[in-house]
Amino acid sequence: MLGAWLLLWGGLAAGADPALLRRADDGAGRCTYSFTVASPSEASCPEAGGALRAELAALAARLSLLESREPGATVAESPRACGELRRAAARLEEDKGRLEREKEELRRRLESSARELARLRAGCPPRGDGPLRDALHGSGQASRWDPQTVDYQELKSARMEVPASRLLQETAQGRAGAEDSGCGELVWVGEPVVFGQADSIAGKYGVWMKDPEPVPPFTRATTWRVDTVGTEVRQLFQYDDAEQFSKGYPAKVHILPRALESTGAVVYRGGLYFQQRRSRLLAKYDLRGEAIVAEKEIPGAGYHGQYPYSWGGYTDIDLAVDETGLWVIYSTEKAKGAIVLSKLDPETLEIQRSWETNIRKQSVANAFVICGVLYTISSYTVPNATVNFSYDTATGTSRPLSIPFQNRYQYLSMVDYNPAERQLFAWDSFHMVAYPVRLARA
Ligand code: CA
Image (cartoon, rainbow, N blue to C red; front, side, top):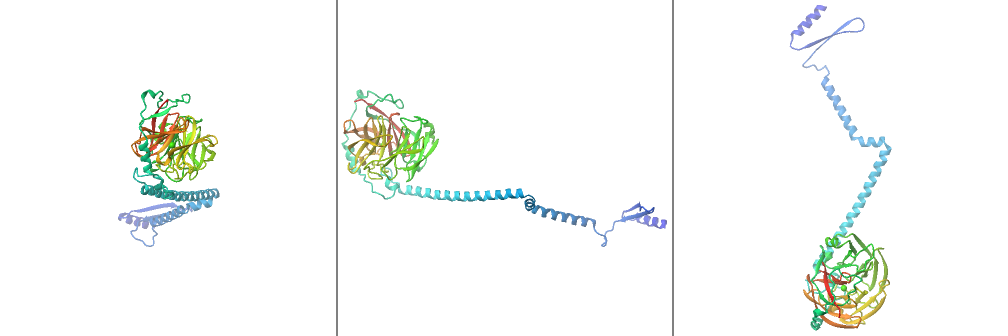
């Protein structure tokens, strides 16, 4: 038997295919032999590689299944994680809703701005063609501007030369202090100096101001600006100083509780004084407390296009500040369109006293008060305009003047005197400018 096995082994060993003989004790004192021969093809023999691949494929499928079920499995396995995920989902839903609402609001505002811009572009008259007011604010009341009256008054204003000997006291820019009243009559207006420039249509006209008697925390350097283009003017820009103002970097934007109309506002003793929209009501807005602290109606005052300056723009009620206090320039039916000048109590806005002049309000471009004397400007658009009339409240008399006044950008929408700076602040077609002045004692 052993010989037969060896013969078989020898025969197999002589073949090309390798064979492996194994011997082992079967545990019962017997020796078992086994050998393995590679077979090129044997259908009955199970394929080891195939089984392994099948097993690997099954594992991969299981792994894939586990991966695909991982979130669900985690949620199922951790109630706390489940709660967090639900809360996060709720927050995302809330954010989504809020962003949708903001998107809708921005879309609405964009459309509104586009309409306003289109309206301004379509309605803006060529420079010098007349008041912009009607174009901006729809038909409303027709302008009562009468250019013939302007010519008449300008022709009537006789040239008045001021001898050098009368220039007794001149105070250059920024040197006039409260202790130096330096009062006198206006004899000279210098060239405009640009302090700021608007970069959008909203700043074509407006009003810029400094408080001649500031109240802390504000200072003489604090500068204020309102762009008055549009129908709902409520933004008051506050700048720390001239540099921030010129750069257009406000320190704060106040939102006024009432809409403001036109370019007649002033800042005085810590308050913004302004005319409320479509109203003869004046308001005092406390700059520190950020609230309206006084309101008063100007009896009989025309407003919203009844008695504007020649520029238009609803400049019916114009506030002014001088060395002596707070004033309001307007007109009434009783005065038949002539300028009425009233002194106001800055606390209560009560009228303390009024003067009726013989200067037609609609025939002049703007007005301001220096040392109790009202001065008017002949034109808002002629490059070489003049300060053409004065009215002295001390004597109750007016007289023609011809002090050169330069409209450099030919669209003068606001002029105010600042007694502390001793300058005229003005807004001339996107430009915030100031003119030095000289006063002379009579
Ligand atoms: Ca004015």
